[in-house]
Image (cartoon, rainbow, N blue to C red; front, side, top):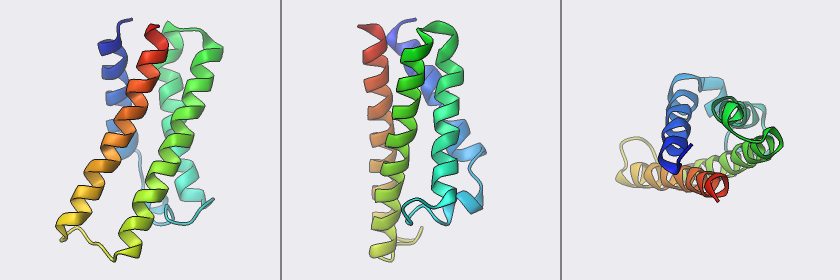
Length: 120
């Protein structure tokens, strides 16, 4: 599979995991390191990456990259959530959306890294 195909699969997975499967109980504790909600959300990303890429590549490599995706996702969300919390940002603040955009960009950089590893 070419790089663009990998990115499309990971983008699809990202939208499903971040916007359709993420529940309010996952969101509320993301700024608390080790809290169940953030771990569950990141685990959804780990499993999603595993599921979309497993049929196409070496299973051990996909397992490692899926774990990397989950760990990266957890920490990116943790940093974003703490920035929002520390600065008392709400959805009515322009900075809230700027930080959200940087958060999404960081997730996609993770996917670019994964795709690069898989195509070389």
